[in-house]
Image 1 (cartoon, rainbow, N blue to C red):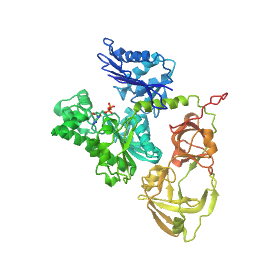
Image 2: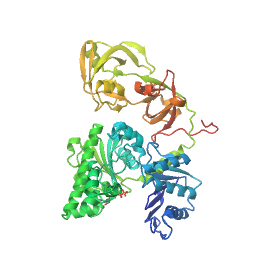
Image 3: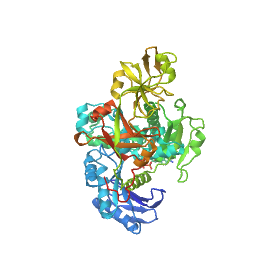
Image 4: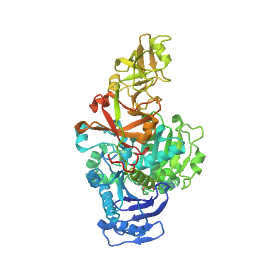
Length: 606
Ligand code: ADP
């Protein structure tokens, strides 16, 4: 299968024909200087100069030249990089008129990018009308950012009126390198907490907690966060008024200053190329030295902050032109992180080189609990793969069984030792009622849970006893108790907060174990085969119909022969969806981790 990947920018167009299965590239095109005289380089060694075509036709002209080269190549689809997907897109999509309209509508948020991306899409659709086109968004991966991370502390009405929030960018790269890093470590991203540092001309850091982006340094626009090639990154917002009043800068001039004249280029006075800046800094240029210090200081600050956000970290990944190639920057960012459990191996950091054959290397000490990795990013391949997955799902149908939904009220699982501390020596839990999941029961026993603000009485204990204590509460309960608990799957209680428990025979101080349960679906391996999913895939489920219908994204699949098909949500979620007894859900789509079952011959499309 060959996918044509296109990244249409205002002054350049990059394209490649890639086999998503192997990553092999059949042809690459790099067109620069689009606005005056396009120069097109092809990977087969040929070049074209196309003067006098005018900027309006520039993208189409480049793609026409590419099409001629591809006369004998069968394309399965065309993938377009689109910078801003706004609220609308949390994944790659097949492009239709509605999608185009939404991309155009997002021009307000990305005036320099979305209109040109769309021009690329439209030119390519005219030239390659027989195949499907797909949009892959830079913001999509960060759609999982929790409210606390994506919200600016501004008046709420203003946020809502103008769609102001943090979106994050470079999502395709962060997601890709996290997956490569996890594979290298023999694990899956859903089991790891990873900090990814994408350091190219634009730079951003992401905190990827168990596979989901939970923080990232770019915000509403790509200007926030790290110091970059020409962008300032974080500044005091008070600076805007100060510069306006003191330096007479207009809004447009401020935008130009912060986006194009700042960052490494602004500080160093030697341009935005890190190689030059590092060279001059070793030769003693104080401006270049300061540029390097500001760049790496900010990066370290974000790494520390993101380790705190996730309550720890398993791997720190460096990518992008700077992250992949500069041992000096990696050293400055990653040295003295021993307190976090990350111990750099300076020899490996300096000697190891990334290549096509070796797209990842580990530069931490063997005994370093946190792995330090350099990973070669490949956004084109990531885009091609996402298109390949969408093509494979083309005939997916929804003739799948409905999923019964159960609301799981707050409850607690206890160890035998805790049961005895709370209810007396030798006490065993008594069955009050058997639950739908085989072997599970609601016990007669009730406990009082005490948090820093309030206490909740009569919290039901569920049996049988387990190997770890675990209190599962809703967000509303959390605020009532005054505890900030992470969303976790059952059993993952490391680095969670604790609370106090009171029983008739004594009290227990739990060191950890308080979670807000990740909504999930229990199913047997047979069910999993029918739904085309596997344990710990993440899926989307539609609930209800008409006005009250609601789609729950980010639903975790749990597979065991001991389970019965049922989706569990907490009371807050049940209230939000106004769910009634007997309500059922329909599996809508699966994440990249899984695929919807393909249509069987003769089967009706649902
Ligand atoms: P883009 O964000 O445009 O895709 P890249 O990811 O290619 O950019 O990164 C470009 C940056 O990488 C430039 O600042 C360049 O100087 C830097 N870079 C490339 N090679 C090295 C190197 N060996 N040492 C330090 N910086 C490097």
